[in-house]
Amino acid sequence: MKGGSIELGEVSKNASTNKGVKRGLSIMDFILRIIAGVATLASAVAMGTTDERLPFATSFVQFRAEYDDLPSFVFFVLANSIVCGYLALSLILSILHIVRSTAVKSRILLIVLDMVMMGLLAAAASAAASIVYIAHYGNTQANWFPICQQYNSFCERISGSLIGSYIAVALFIIIILLSQSAISRN
Image 1 (cartoon, rainbow, N blue to C red):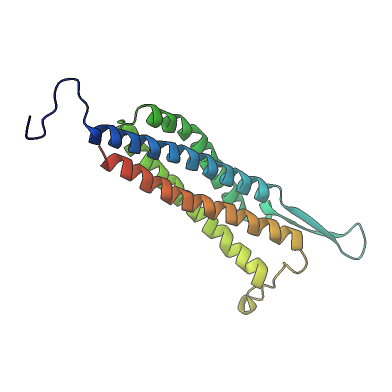
Image 2: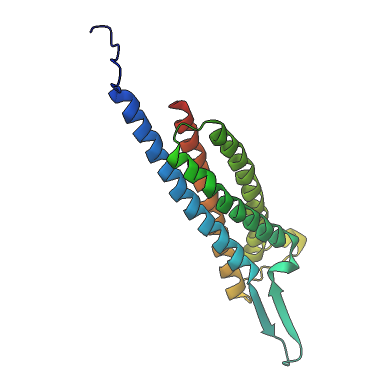
């Protein structure tokens, strides 16, 4: 038979290869979602448990630095917690995509929700990063002095939690690109 027609019961090699590629993309999506979930959970826990106290002249007078002293850090913890919960719930659809690699509507839904969550996470990380910058370097024009010389542990933990959050943002970009690639293969 000429012209590339397929006999009954015969599967084209392109269709099976395409299905295998989509399954591979779905497995990669699942793994990246787990890693991003761990990164957001670690960021939320690291920021949420940040607390340092410095004694002043006596043990009765102490200066403290906690994450909930600044609304940007509270927003950061809440946003990371929301995104972590979303990633945990989205694993169900990711498993569905591994089993049924032809599902398109659920992939489109995940892309839209992934972009919303990535925006939320990027906004929270950016807001917290501005406060971390002020904590490290201060602002002489506003007479805000850097506090990281006194509160070393506090600054190390909040800086570390930002790294985890930005890693999750980068993983979201990769997840979105993988999902778009899987949709384009239909």
